[in-house]
Image: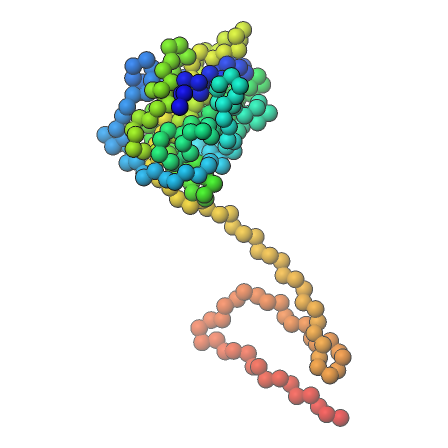
Length: 259
């Protein structure tokens, strides 16, 4: 995959100010996230990669972030096509790469701001190691990722293979990317990118919302046999279980008097 092309359009337009940089950075040569070992740093072990399934929503509870995920390819300039500014609270998954939870590094990008307000990834730079990211997938599985690195990567020089390539080749990883550094108002250009690297640490079925009870339909009065008169309507059904040893109701029918 031509990883270098993926970042071309990410930080070239939009925004009204400079994004904050992480307070601490785990970087290697050239400002790229350094290879690390989760267990040695007190992070949980990696979960086995999942089968491929597209993402539907992204949630970072510590940021109060919950966003729909759109599936995008490359735009005509060769960059990941971001959601339009009208949907700046949505994020874009690079659909030609791995799906979140499957083997390899999956990429999700989003706006940091617009000309008028902060956008979906405005708080991305304040994430810390160990923070949790949840992605709900089309197969009904919620994939849990644990943040391993938060890195500011300058646009120049830029080694995209080290940013987008896997830190460990045998696990599922997720990269969240947005604009960072200083913002040049004349060029409409950010000077860097904020790259959050996380890896799969759990998977569970999505919780279904509780179903609302269906209203009971009124029953039509039945006809008494041979009389043409309506029978007495039955009492409403109530879901109250009988207690231990409770008596059952008499089922004897009333006799009909003959004239």
